[in-house]
Image (cartoon, rainbow, N blue to C red; front, top):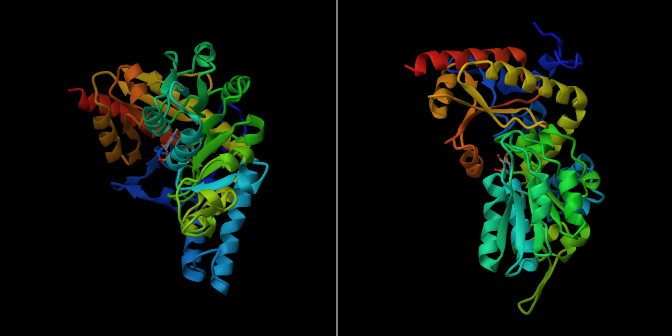
Length: 418
Ligand code: PLP
């Protein structure tokens, strides 16, 4: 029976059963058991409106954009172009020109490292990241530093998985040319004080990039309030198709940056003697874009904007609290990542048990969790563990699903420990 669940912490009503109906996959089964999807930090599920949008594009107006004078191309171009303004409003950028479509967070970071970075980072300079970065916010900067003879500096974190701000302040110097930090950690759940991180860097005129791959779905992102110079996120983590993502950059920075890739669309004129580039954002969008999926991204962001955001957030926080309390009450379970500010991501280890074995056991119960390093090997190294079991929740998850997880963990301990 459908019911309105009352959040046990905030007492705010959030109609979980109603939002669950928007996601067809949640009605499904895994190994014959009702699916419990707790791998949201890897990718979110897609609502029917997004699926319908993709089907509509391919069924009714599949065409390349910006080049055709015919009806289908015009229709596809209009549907595509409007997404830029949906994204602009979603993150409160001051202009559509600051919105570049990329294939995901990874590409957003690589774009900035290889254009802004290559132009502005020189031998002897320093780039700062934090100890809790996803590999995609480490490796592109390492590659840049290696190429340029620069040094990558790392802001340490404490045993709770929180950035040590005093150490960050000490790292900032005249040598620092760029700071790139994660908004919300995918393996620990920590929500970082990015506004303060940006403010401190700006005191020294150092630009800051924010990896909002997780932050985009757990927090309200306002790039003007944050005053970040660059911010990137992936569509697939925010109810939209894979292969989509957004790079936000401040106009003056984007204008001064060299292009990323060469090809069609990013040029204004091509002569064998010299090519002139298109204006932003097109300068950074070479070739035929991911038309269908970007149109789907518009539908995904519109869907999310239509949800009761405060209610959704309160519900996720209540799920986090509930799961954290229940898990840590189990003998032998240790939470990894206990920051004060957390999104609904719970990472844990179980004494004497391999995370992968637990993940496979839970899978037999229809429960999808993620196990391993979560592309954050340095985080695992700091905690001296090979990996964690991670359950990450979105607003369509329920307390009953968490009860099943707890039951599953208890069973795993009983059966796998012998
Ligand atoms: N940064 C964080 C914090 C992430 O969680 C992820 C994906 O899990 C990424 C970056 C990379 O995102 P993508 O693989 O969509 O490019």
